[in-house]
Length: 77
Image (cartoon, rainbow, N blue to C red; front, side, top):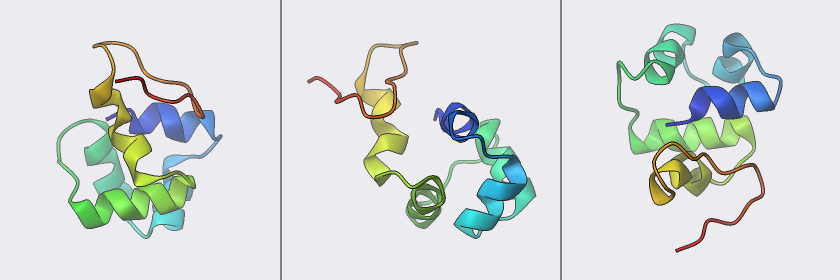
């Protein structure tokens, strides 16, 4: 998941995103570092905290490996 990049692009700290999404700071760190897989509910909360559609959090899996779409860029099939 490209969560860290999305968070940093929006100028948010881990603490701010945790607060905005209702998650714990530590839980968010684990997710960003790939140590935990977020549940569907957690993905929805993160999307709310980032002000994006939930599908944006999964868009990285729809593009070529290593390429992360920019905010607002439609993903091609």
